[in-house]
Image (cartoon, rainbow, N blue to C red; front, side, top):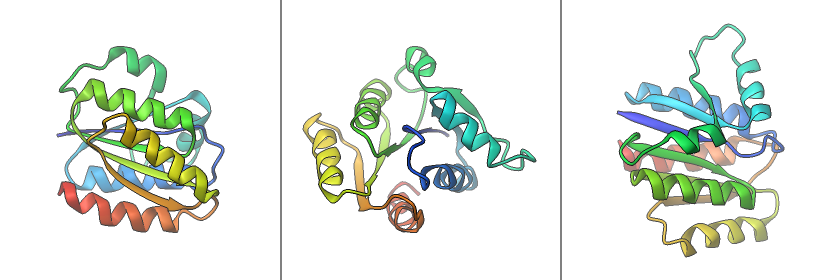
Length: 152
């Protein structure tokens, strides 16, 4: 089984620790996990694992978008905290045609609703979990832990 984790812009402090957490959780579930991110987000994740304890598999988001094919992954998990991240998530989901989980969050509750609506209006079949969060990763972790049980 293979999983792809999409990271958005690294502006939000909670994304990087959650990326490592999600990678670890999916790996323990038996997934061969890949993280796709822009260069800045990739560097933040890489620095978070200086001893390469997690053996993170990091790829460039835009380059990977050009390489993927339907069936390449069994699970897609996307961090959605900007409209661009919502667009990337929907695009990857439409190409991959696999089980998908959107982790929607923002410090602004109206943005959370906006991003959820963007995903839903695209015709996505993703399980969407949404929470108001920015600095503190705990609300995202709680939502992820509950939602990922749907894929066990």
